[in-house]
Length: 112
Length: 116
Image (cartoon, rainbow over all chains, first blue to last red; front, side, top):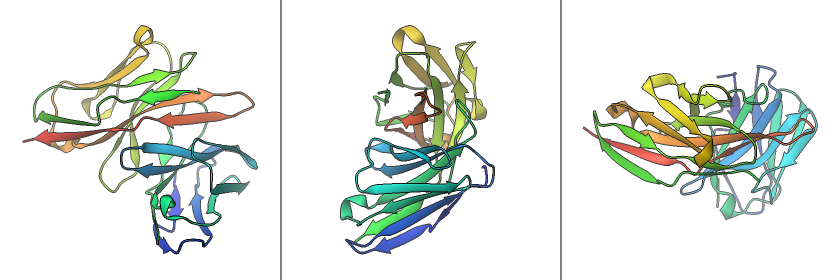
């Protein structure tokens, strides 16, 4: 499973507060992704990274930012959490183009 | 931009029956194609993948998928479904967009229920 750890696994936060989710991998994979999963929408890409300090936006990036200062860590920040950002967030990573992507166990975020 | 369509939101089959889950993609070149499975409360696990070569690919748990370029499809099949196959299935497309950037896009998923 590429040693992917997401933290925290569960979080409840208040509207308007900043929140940071962490994804940590131990396999030195180049590519890392953040997705959100919502009923009826499947997995939607928020941001992704193709190397240290190389990131790009996905289809639902508004309200989110990311940082990747070292290979093993990919941080997702909700700058000012809103109720619409209540979701399950998954991190994924893989070694190169076309290789298998490994997923973390997910973070369930509730914004109240 | 690439896109992935899974037309069936929910499918119910009887145990022992055959299964086909549909996936269509939109992408100019031959894409990297994947099927993943997600059990409740879990992350996603790879079932199989296609890059090139033989258009019929075999995966884990007795699943197979066939790539049809003319139909832009990558349908997942299993000859005989087991109750443990009940899960949600996701088709995914990988696209290399240059400058080292590679993006993995998922369909909305098909939930499979199995009647004993």
